Every structure is written in C-alpha cells, then in structure tokens.
Image (tube, rainbow, N blue to C red; front, top):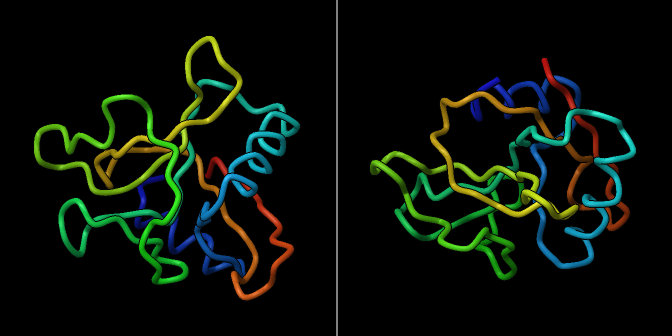
Length: 128
C-alpha cells in the first residue's frame, strides 16, 4: 500500500506508522523484521516525511524532527522532486535496513507500532 494508506491502516488497528528515533530502535527493527520471514527485498513505510517542508524530516507519529537517521549513501535525494516519505529497505549484501526517501504513492509493506508514549514499543508489519 502507499504511505497514506499505510498511515490509515495502522490507525485502523489502533497503532501508528513507525518512528525510528534512535540507534536502539533501528537495531530492534533490524532484529525484528527478519524473524517474520518476509521477503528481504521489500521496503517498509515509516512515519518519516518531509511533506511539510522539503528537506526537514519529521516523524508524523510523534511530530518530532529527526535527531537520528540511517539513510543509504546518497539519500535522501528527492529524486524527480517527488520523494517525501521514508521507507526502510534492506541494504544489498548486508543485513541492515537503511532508509530511503520515496514517492509517497509507491507501494511498500507497512511497519506499525504501539502508541509512541510508551517506552517499550511493539512493532507490527502488514503487506495488505
């Protein structure tokens, strides 16, 4: 589903599109996702976006600006002037998930999490 559909899907099940705000959370997701045995070539939407102002990334689920990032080399690049939403993607040949800015209407898996007010966040994934 696209980023907007992903946002709505997470909210419909009482969750939020994920925010990855620290190296600890990044590592947690990198351990969590492979255990689901989903295709490792897939991308996963996060709540990260610069739709409000180009180049100023915010986590929509928390309203906070990025203080941590894990972008692929050369990213974010706003390719074709239309990449405003952040996905996590597997780095080829590596087991880590790096970030990429992508067109918000592209299709990807969904990475949802529990209410961000709680320190022990539970993540969930959907391909719907």
